[in-house]
Amino acid sequence: MAVHTVSLTIRMVGDTQVDNITKSVADALAGSNLKAGIVTVFVKHTTASVMIIEDEPGIRADTKTFWDRLVPPDPRWQHNIVNLGEENGHSHLRGQLQGPSVTIPFTDGVLLLGIWQRIVVVDFDTRARMRELVVQVLGE
Ligand code: ZN
Image (cartoon, rainbow, N blue to C red; front, side, top):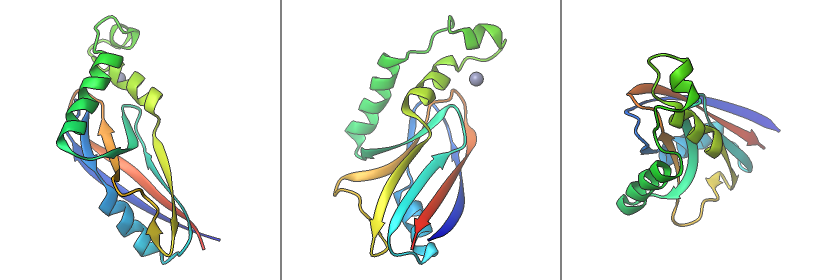
């Protein structure tokens, strides 16, 4: 059993922006030289999430609409009231609900994604930021 860890840094603009990182994850897996195991993709922030989606423009638009309806921006979120100047209470709640990571199995050095499945990071925050992710390959 071996572990191979790669860090990714991505500039994102927030507002439920979706960034497809599937190729970066596949590159990290290739760099590990491992043949079978699991890959964990983890974002190191409380206002962003990693998820698996079908990546096409309609789904991207629907993803934003879905989160805006489910957890809307609201000045009454306590995070915005207690932390003067913060306006991203909804961003934190979305991150809590979706979670920071996904795990994908691989064999023969290839991610076992379904034909339409893509790995994306979604930034729920209200301003542009640099986002740090960890891709950790565990296998043999
Ligand atoms: Zn905040």
